[in-house]
Image 1 (cartoon, rainbow, N blue to C red):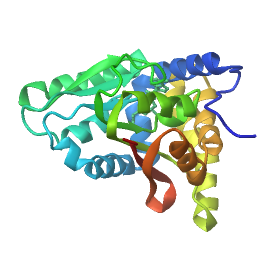
Image 2 (cartoon, rainbow, N blue to C red):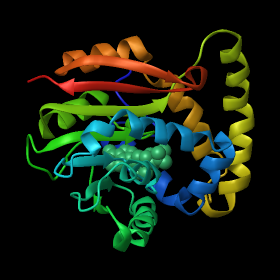
Image 3 (cartoon, rainbow, N blue to C red):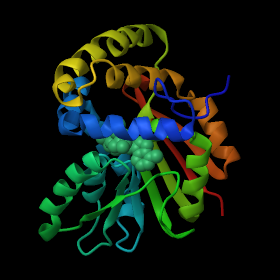
Image 4 (tube, rainbow, N blue to C red):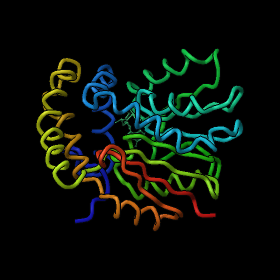
Length: 257
Ligand SMILES: C[S@@+](CC[C@H](N)C(=O)[O-])C[C@H]1O[C@@H](n2cnc3c(N)ncnc32)[C@H](O)[C@@H]1O
């Protein structure tokens, strides 16, 4: 069966899935950064920087309108800000989990006086409170996979992008071969155990969030399917660049003119 969107355990429809995802991120928000860095041995920083570098030419334009959607605690946004010139238009950093977003907002305000900054916006990626054809760039890191409807997400991004505007989706993937087998053991057994130790005391849920991550990656459409979906929803020049043996990767495309 073709996967249409994230379905955390117990969610019966899209509204239920979105609610479960939001509650899960609200619950783990206090430990999210720590969990991330431990689980990825800080490789996540390289992935955010690499993604930001890919969009350097747009970010260098002070008037470019940029959205980091599903920004969470803001590390992707901070990597994008490094490439913004002084006096540039603020980056919009949006997420529907208040717990995650409030932590990101603290990081953005810290740097506000010293240079380019970001503005936090509580918003649902599937219903963005933004004008059609208003953005030059949308980036999302490890958030797209959590949307309740992938096609609806791509269509909503398409609506708010200007013709020719660019999209970057950084997310996990499942590598093949021997590397894939070794990684599957880490991802399905070691990672949930570490997650339980780090987040258990704050999330109050002994199993859910740590089982959800590997399941959601397993259910996420593989690159050829994602690229097809991007093309059919109106994106051109679609490509996928694997990062770190294909554990993660960056999808890119631009809104057809
Ligand atoms: C794994 S975190 C990634 C956060 C950050 N981008 C990073 O790279 O660390 C996924 C984020 O997506 C957000 N999210 C999931 N579905 C969303 C939706 N429909 N609208 C807005 N945010 C959403 C969650 O609240 C969460 O903060």
